[in-house]
Structure formats: structure tokens, C-alpha cells
Image (cartoon, rainbow, N blue to C red; front, side, top):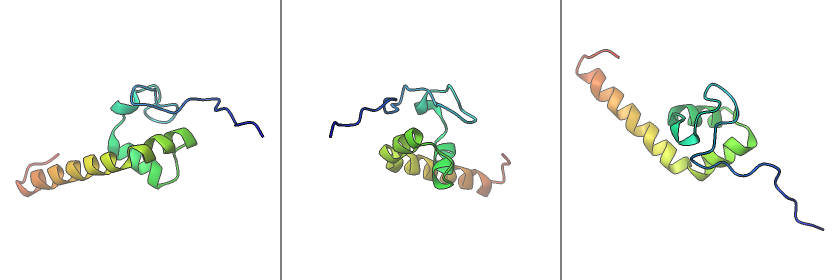
Length: 80
């Protein structure tokens, strides 16, 4: 049996987001909280899911940092 060829190449950081709110934005520029949301809610297509899975640890770390910064600002009384 011949090895199946991929029709579309894997997404990389400079690849364009293929669909959704951030369509045609470089993957590295799509907000991490958006990527995590669509992944966790089964809204990402196969290629996007594979990209997220490949970068999941870094994405989760960045989202956690963003949440920490928001909490710090909320503690000072500043509004978003």
C-alpha cells in the first residue's frame, strides 16, 4: 500500500490561519487564548488542531501569563 500524500502541508508559524475570526492572519499572530478556545471546544479543523497540539504547551503557558496579568491589574482597581 502506498503512503498517503498530504494535500495540504502542515501549518507553521508563518502559515495563514485558514478559517474563522482570524482567517488570513499568520498563525504566530493569532491570539493564544483564541487558539486554546477553539481547540478545547472542538471548533478547530484538523490542520489547525495539529498546529495547536504541536504548540500546546507554549500556548497554555502564554494564556496563563495573560490571566495572571489581568488578575494583577484587577487587584489594583484598574479597569480593563
